[in-house]
Image (tube, rainbow, N blue to C red):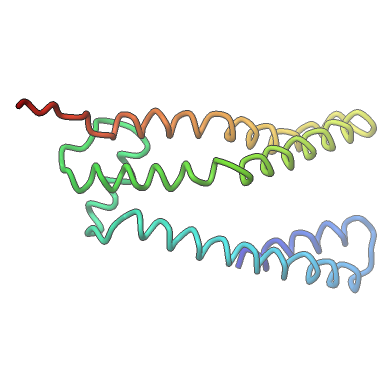
Length: 162
């Protein structure tokens, strides 16, 4: 569905740019199909990883675990706390390594491109710079927040006396 929406939007922009309907249709197919395939693959992979992290808990406990990842008091229920810890770790995994570096690089290039376009054409084009700027901020902020939350969800080591 994401590929269809992306293709339609790209086709509409191509048509609004003064191209023919044929060029807009071809552009929609050429961009929408690969985007849809990649988005579908990524989404299925993400959902499998999240199901593994949730650990087969009942739906009400899964909701509590997801809420615990976002903040609030650490759950008293050990199952919910463990699931929240696994879910937070799954989220954090997407913000590490090559994936994070590639995302930052793409967002920097998009930001530079939109700012350059705004300088050469219209200041209104700076509105487009908000998207990559917000995504860059997210790449900086969200992993730090997840690490803090993981620390709070991790049980304190217990001392054993001999």
